[in-house]
Each structure stands twice: as C-alpha cells, then as structure tokens.
Length: 416
Image (cartoon, rainbow, N blue to C red; front, side):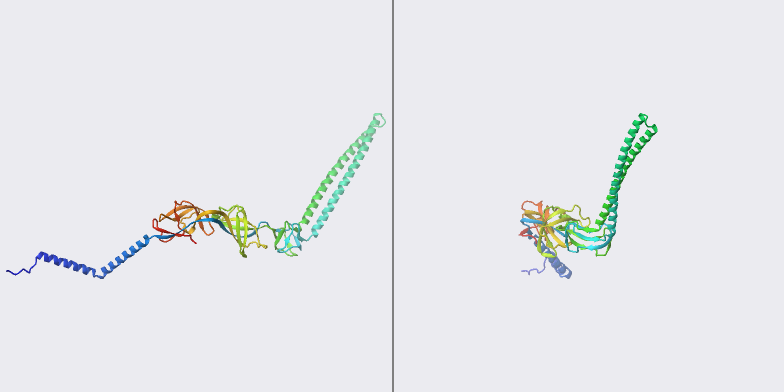
C-alpha cells in the first residue's frame, strides 16, 4: 500500500490563507486607538439618543385648569384721596390784611367771616358816594318844585292872555298888549318843558349816584372774605399785616363731605368699569381697616402718557379724618361669574387682549389651540369663553417638553 499524500490543494490553501489574513487585518484595524474610541463614542451617542427618545415619548404630566364657581372679577387701581370741591379763596382787591378768623384744620360755615382787609380808604369812598346820592335825591325834589311853579305860572299867563284877547276884540286894549300876553304864555309853556327836562336830568344823576354808591359798597364788601360753603380749612397762606394783591390765595378750603378717591386704572383693564360698581379700598395709613365705596364717575379723557383712565370713587365708610393726597389701593368689582374656566396669563402665548394660544390635553395628547378670552382676574388669570374643543383640558403651566401630539397625563389643579 502506498502512503497517504500530505500535500493539500493549492487553491484551498491560498483561500484559507486569505481569510486568515483578512481577519487579522480587521483585528488589527479595530485595535487602533482612534478607531476603538470612535466606536465607543458612536455607541454612547446611540445610547443617549435612545434614552432621549424614551424620555420624550413617555407621557408628560400636565396640570390643567378646572371650572370654578362664584368667581369675582376685580380690577386693580392705584390712586389717592382727593376732594371733589376744593377752592383757593382770596380777596378781589389789594390792601393790608388786618383780621384773620380761621386757621388750618378749622371747620367753617357758609357766610362766616374768615378775614378782612383795611377799610379806612374804602369807607371814605362809600361815604362820598352816599353824599352824592343824597344830593341827587334833593336835586330831584328841587326840579319837581320848579316844575310845579312853572305850571302855576303857565296857568296865570294863559288866563291873562285869554282876557287880553277878549278885551282886544272889544277894542278895550291895543293889539300890542294882546301880543305881549300871548308871548308871555308861550314863555311860561317853555318854562314848564324846561322844568320837566330838569327832573329827567336829576333822575339820571340819581341813577348814576346810586350805581356809584353800589360800586363803592361792593368794593367795601370785597375787603371782607367769607366762606362760600361749609368747609374745612386745609391751608392758610398769609399772616396779619401782609399786604396782599388782588387774587392772592389766603385759604384753601374743602367742602365738607366732598372727599372721594381717584383711581388710575390701566386702559387695558378699564373696559368693564361702570358707574355704581362696588369698590374695596385700602389706605396706606390704615392697612388693617377695610373701606368700601362705589364708582361715581369715570373720566372721559385718559392720560396720553401713562395710558391710564381716571375713576372716581365715593366712600361708604370714610375714616373720621381724611388726608388729601394719601395713596390708596382700589379693587373695583366689574363682574361676578357663576362659573368660569380660568387659565394663568403666563400659560398663554401670543395674548393680544382678546385671544391667544394655550396647550390642551385631548384624548391623551397635547395640542395647541387658539382660544378667546373675556375677563382678567386680579391674580392675572384669563377667562376662556371660546375656541376649546369638546372635552379638551387646558394646561395651567407650560413645561419644556411640550410638543404637538405628545402623550400626556392629567394632574387636576390650577397654577398658584
């Protein structure tokens, strides 16, 4: 028997050698540091992406708003205590101040004398005007007496002329004498007319004297300052002996029970304010006391710089002592809602005062919806009145992971 051959097929040998060398080259390539670290990095990135995908796809917990009942909608306004009737009063003429009868904090009655100026010069003018008036009255009486005298003389001349004319017809007197008596009658008649004119002139002088007397007495009255209404003296500006000019203020008066509050309200919040609405107020000097009132006037002109509207409030229970200009916080009740769905303004995107976008949970998925709003509460929550699909719940807080269509789980509640 012949011995078995130990030689192999050359082709097979070359193939095996080629596979071994390719494997060796691959192992050698993978043993390179750059390649090894690169593969490790790719694997880490793939792992991170997988974790992110899992986190992003897991359901996010969403706090949603619930329908609330008996919601009071109030608008905030910052303002101060003011007076509806306030006057700075003074004299209409100038002179030396000789009398002061009121001071800061005094309560005065209508017609009460508050101050006087020196009267001597004006009293003399009044006395002269009175004398002129009396002279005018006497002049009228004298003119009336002259008229009566002229009428008597006229009657005598008329009678004499009648007799002379009769005698001339009988040729007892001459025509010349008759002409003279006729002339005397005409003169007497003219004297009556003159006497009547003198009476009219005297009456005109009397009217002028009366007007002058009234004028001087008015000026005399202007030297006495009286209270125009029941008031409280807020400030006194002058002291005794001061020479004041016409129009200089002497006192600042505020009418009794004319205090009210002036609130400045942002125009964007003032649209629902109306006269008669209830107001809660808090004074800075009395933070523990509650004051109430109602809106009595809304200013017809807004401030063009601050874009605020003026709202005037009459208090129901003002404090016993009021300080003008004191800062007050006002809360005006503009509506009471039987039920309302409220969402915080921070959870609304693109809010323009009427509408904006909110996140909703619908069938377990997140969606963005454009909804309409109406009222805004004092804690910056908006009342949704339209735009929500049936069964949609509105998110009260926007989380970083919110995205359209993402799975969501609801947590009942409301944002603080």
